[in-house]
Image 1 (spheres, helix red, strand yellow):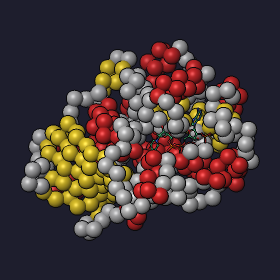
Image 2 (cartoon, rainbow, N blue to C red):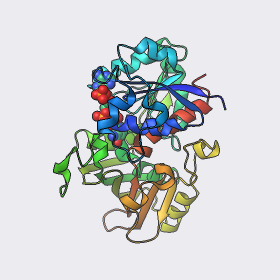
Image 3 (cartoon, rainbow, N blue to C red):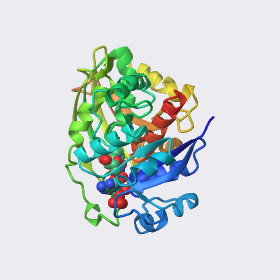
Length: 360
Ligand code: NAP
């Protein structure tokens, strides 16, 4: 496989640090540019992140001495050094829209973790195992932007990375009618650690700004279809969500209640989860988990601490499937929010785009 030079925009943040770890030893991608705000620009990566490094693995040695650039002021230099960039920044939505489009218009493809472009109709929002065909919208987006190479592709919100993969293959056969979900979300999802957020210890906060809307609305774009120069979101399944912040470092858990148009037997649900695999598994992409959906029979599983790192944090853990008195079934599921839900999902999306030739 050909190798590609890549940049990380937002390299100093929680998701950026995950990108740094995943990409420092990636077989296809070679980090040649790190960028963040003007506050970090001019420092070595080590100087910029040392006091807030939040990962259990150390800062990658091969990235320590790279000088961090200003994502906006140094865009020409960055684009000259890379084949594409990953982007995970904490900025206002209009600023992120402008930044990502600026990179795309510099003929630099952007694989984004930000929410700003998720509902731009010609920007694909992809979970690689579920809707890889949405990459087909990229030529239409390039036409709108007036680019030859440049485009933006995004991954969806971290909150839904457990329950949407569990429901998607069931919907194909049995039609998901409605779904109620409560998520229990880790503090790294807010870019925080326990040291930086002591108020969360012994506490649960029943509000995460914007999260419930994303959890209800984004699945419909994943379920959507390309129609001409846009992706038209589906009208169903119907989702309702409550999202809570809980005192957990990493890993978003979801409690799911679901009803189907045709109620499947429990054994069918378990068989579908066990046998489900997607394009990333067929292509054997470096970050594709071998077994995407993993069901645990034990009543007290999955657990955040025990299961979040399954298959490098890229697999989904499911448990407690049982019939419900109000809905057809209920179950719980779990995914790692900064791996599958953020940087790992971004890297897998980039691997898919790479395998399909979009970075050539
Ligand atoms: P974070 O830890 O607060 O990091 C924010 C990053 O943005 C830092 O690198 C920061 O650079 C950079 N930044 C801020 N202002 C900038 C500017 N004007 N120009 C360039 N860079 C700037 O945030 P995070 O948790 O990593 O989240 C980043 C993005 O990923 C957000 O859009 C978030 O919604 C999304 N996301 C996060 C998760 C998660 O689990 N954490 C999951 C999915 C998606 P400095 O260090 O120089 O300030």
